[in-house]
Length: 199
Image (cartoon, rainbow, N blue to C red):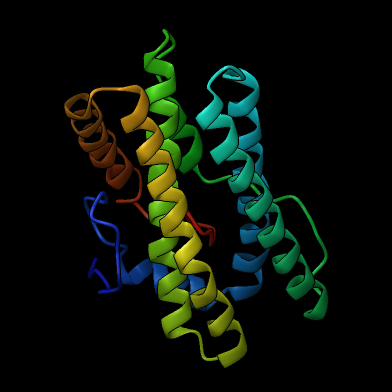
């Protein structure tokens, strides 16, 4: 599958395929609904990590800001759904998130490291794919909306990476990030049969 050139965060091993973009553009209502789910899950991930590591003050402070911003994006996407007459509804989850979480080691502090890096990789992939939508969507208003989210996705990746770098030796962080990035790209090597942000 041909890859599409778009601004990406260099933590990603492989760019998104043209097949994903074609699928997404052909099913934008479903993509918008899935985007709503993604923003809610991103906020939940940040909050859950704060509850798991309440004594890590820098982590709590930084993830509070992420959770708030993800909820703002959740509301923005929901407003677009309402304008387009798309009701909120459940969707089958692609294997991406569950697959990534299978790589989280159970013993601390490795669990913290993996959780931070996986969250960062998801943000990095979101940055790339929202950028693709922002570049290729024919609806100028919707395209502008997706372009407006790119900076925050990149910033969230940076926060997760810096938190990992705060609590762990940089060499360990870089080595584990490289391992997880390879796994992340493998998860996306086969396109999920239903359109999703991370399929």
